[in-house]
Length: 200
Image (cartoon, rainbow, N blue to C red; front, side, top):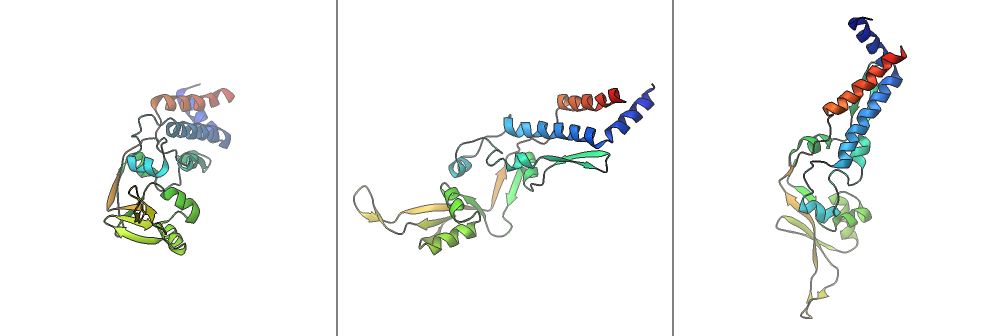
């Protein structure tokens, strides 16, 4: 069998959805594995650790990892990707600028309030106001005040304030590359593709 015939037969064999699906599934697991290992990723920022606790980058909820999927297109091509709009900047890094006035960066303790009131800053501010908490801005932070004063170490009553959000014009996201295939991984995919010839 000549080289041209071999390539033609390989191309025809890969047009079967089952073979393309196998290769797509392998590629998805390879990319997901990079998120799981976190090898070479920049560590979480101190602000992120305060907000969500310690952990590994890109693995807070697993939604990014689980969003990596494949699709067979026109029975001839397998496409691997994600529907998460933030995936590109997480992979490539970059700067996020406020579209209007400020970016609202959650502070420590805000995550618990998100579970109670909702994820958006508006949900949290409205929820706290409804329950009678005072909401106010202090410099570049949004805060809320406990309903009752508490005694300090000296025994005096004082207001207890909590930071909800840090207000910033922009934040820099470090590149954490996960969406790629190594030469070794490409070799494994080509090996799987080549195995189709044995079935002809």
